[in-house]
Image (cartoon, rainbow over all chains, first blue to last red):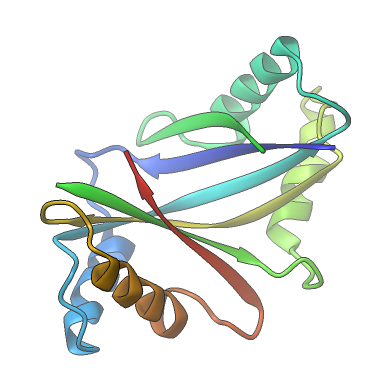
Amino acid sequence: MAKIVVDVMLKPEILDPQGNAVASALPRLGFSFAKSVRQGKRFEIEVEGEPTAAQLAEVEKAAEVLLSNPVIENYVVRVEK
Amino acid sequence: MAKIVVDVMLKPEILDPQGNAVASALPRLGFSFAKSVRQGKRFEIEVEGEPTAAQLAEVEKAAEVLLSNPVIENYVVRVEK
């Protein structure tokens, strides 16, 4: 059983109200480390056996049509050990 | 400028309706690779310079009190190159 991870983040030029809310809450809680915060989605997909190149291509396609909105979001597909 | 990533996922024993919705949508769209899907959150935090151990400890604390609900969620903090 292998795990394929798809990270979906808003494109850098798109305003991220959730990330901004976190960024402004941090100093109120006494945390001063953050210059900026962006919030996105993470999908963990379990597949049978070792993921093949064909499977990864399928996941890329699914990320494009279902998991992300390519107009405003970027996605990254990777295999996680 | 370095990037610290916090991944927040529901604990394995917690029902994940969003992940299940994705898992049942995939076959309808012709994708058959997924045995299971879990959906979580990803935070990208930019910090000035190289992250120090003290900074990472602060991020861990922020993940615990702000970014996750430790009753139902697990989080992972890591530095991304």
